[in-house]
Image (cartoon, rainbow, N blue to C red):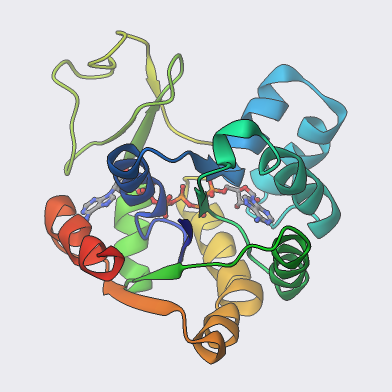
Length: 213
Ligand code: AP5
């Protein structure tokens, strides 16, 4: 099964795609996580990407397409995968189509998590991430047992550089201009599955699973 999780920053793509990936035993490929790791490792691509990410802008199509082409060739992607945060532009979507055609593969679903942009600001300013293992929390909606510490590894919880309100608004603008138009692209292919992304996390997972049965 090959699925795209699509939606605005903070719509819950990461949260939901991890749950679905674990349930179906396929890898969850987050371009955001891959870029942050590359930046942490100090690679050339990582440092280039970090500049755009820190400003809330999209990273160049060329960089992202190369990363995804390479990652989806791996053995663990043979049975399928979930794309979280890719594609985010028309050139990315077209490049994915070409790769899939070359491999004789198709896309099964595009799960579109729909949310009011103001809810996104509330969610993202309250997000905290473990600096050691990357586990995510929210100060109100998913607090850790001990303030400032990860439940899993006791690593320090930090706020992402792009989770400050001004950067969030830049990310939302980039989404509206470059990414949201892709909904129509996938609508025309008949594979878009709309899910209301507000409410309790388990209920949203349930709504997604109904599309996957
Ligand atoms: P990325 O890391 O992908 O960021 P994003 O798309 O902005 O998405 P987020 O991770 O912020 O949100 P999410 O939808 O995954 O929500 P989450 O589940 O975490 O990308 C970062 C940057 O990398 C981009 O800005 C860009 O620069 C670059 N990039 C990445 N891919 C790219 C591409 N293809 N092309 C170009 N550039 C690219 O949830 C958010 C918070 O809300 C969490 O705290 C969570 O606990 C909480 N939450 C989740 N669900 C609920 C709920 N139902 N109720 C209450 N709280 C909830």
